[in-house]
Length: 537
Image (cartoon, rainbow, N blue to C red; front, top):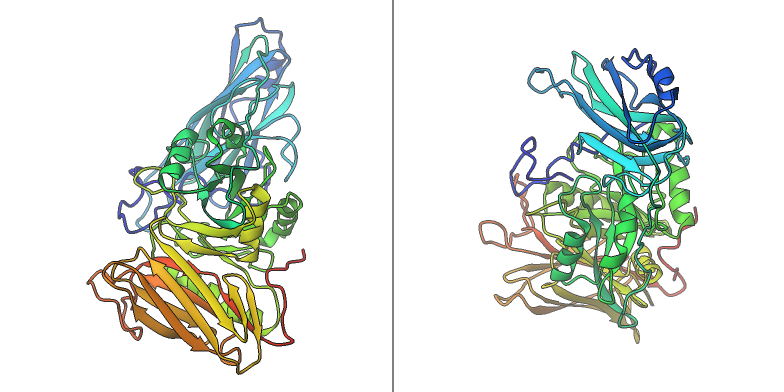
């Protein structure tokens, strides 16, 4: 999601803004181009003394309808210590309502550009106009490592092309010399000092300077601690480069989990819980049928696949891959807006269908997607029941739906259902005789003047206001014959100060912004019990 300090995007603080630097994805297709680098293979092949440089110009024109990715080959000879790249492109005027030129950039090494291959060395989208990499260091978003001889590729991602086309210019500078010391990554540990089986708070969608954020990793870690979080997941766009920076920033009080946001042209998804340094490719569309391959990759690592902001109203953000292989879905992204409202409605409908057919249901998640100030880290975040504060335990809790979504650490909530001498909590099942009374109990604090909603497969079944101090206990009775599940929402008052009556048919929502939202407690009649959130790929 976008950076409000970028002057090219809207500044309305109530709306999320467009990440214009990271939306170039799709089928990786080479394009034959006329460039100004026709003499570069011979020049690059000549012997060069240490300390010398060679600059290779690459220019060309991309028409509308060009491939999603354009590969510009660069011959790298022996003895190169560092590769430095600068680029730019024209931005001609376009008619109102017509997208102008936008072009991303990255680099692949001599191992090639195959989808999911080993050649990836970095991506900065449109966030940077220059980058460099060497054996021991690299610009954030890029991977330090050997500068081996062979054919490297600058990869352009023209995700918007004006009717006039797009003229690009790239300069690749090869600096010769001794390779220097090897890079030493500092990956975060998989465990922090937990409290045993407990509720842990964490934000699973965050960005740093390693993609299009303006916060350094140390600033993100400090912000997470200030927000009262127990864990975070690093999800920079289309790169794993930040994984190696988190080690010194984790600690007994903060678990940091490696991840990535994969930004395709048919939607964005989060890979949560990757192996340190693991990269997930993004260069495909829904029609390419490559998405399942990368879902399997993440699952082999024990990670989660989470469609992000599925109704985000900007180019390439809307989710088009379906939810069948998702482990959870991000229904709340940053400040509450109408697209979150749509995401919750869709998730709730899918929840009812899954339970009706006896299938696994997909848990909901909420994350800040914070890039830079004033976006607030941890607003919202997930409160997860985990066996301990470890990577695997937190992921297990999220996968099972033993979690609820909170606007901030000031909001506290407990939801239980009890009947026939049994009880269950969020993400669990309660199996009772069909007509046995089931008492649903919700305890809330931290939402002054808020409204509690209890929702089942029939829709909202109970509404109750909270007091001025934001605290309250709500008890409501149902049966498993009447409700397949029950979940809770806690809403702030509307902008006009009223809680809403729940029957508005006008353009304004009948509810204020979300303060908390739970995953369901599943109600089943005896003999129909089934463990939720079991998924087979």
